[in-house]
Amino acid sequence: QQKVQQSPESLIVPEGAMTSLNCTFSDSASQYFAWYRQHSGKAPKALMSIFSNGEKEEGRFTIHLNKASLHFSLHIRDSQPSDSALYLCADDSGYNKLTFGKGTVLLVSP
Amino acid sequence: EAAVTQSPRNKVAVTGGKVTLSCNQTNNHNNMYWYRQDTGHGLRLIHYSYGAGSTEKGDIPDGYKASRPSQENFSLILELATPSQTSVYFCASGRDWEANTGQLYFGEGSKLTVL
Image (cartoon, rainbow over all chains, first blue to last red; front, side, top):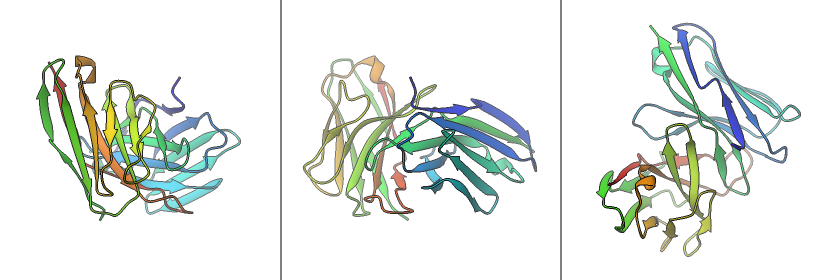
């Protein structure tokens, strides 16, 4: 069973909307959580990461981590067509290793 | 920005043939990784390395070997390629994790087709 599960599998939102992506993980001992973004045909690129419970904001992007509920989320405010991509969440599966979810395909329609 | 270069970018191989995918990083990162990406599976870890001379098995190592001859280079070797190994392979590098770090830097990927 996938250790990191993402939902939804795909999502279409209008330009300017708020986008919310979700991730659940199975290992409560995980210390590090990250979101990566991958545009079509390109390399995955780190977007944001967090080590402790709570919230972190960078520009239009906010991540929330709740270890008690094993839940990790990414919120994109004022979504733009350029945000259209595959979003991957990840947690550490041991020292210096990342386990990724299957990803959510986001399409922001102009 | 950290640089990770993969070669070849595209490869067509025959079943039973040997395939070597190469990765070079100029970031002086200790850690390097090989992932494969297939539709419906996300990124899955094949092998990784903590430094020159070390290789470790990831989550799906069967059918693959890895070699880390130097800090900069990390290779993935398919001794007997099979059609099920058709995929896009990504190499990544990263520093030893400290607070607020742990970011992986990925190469652009190597698309392998095994006929």
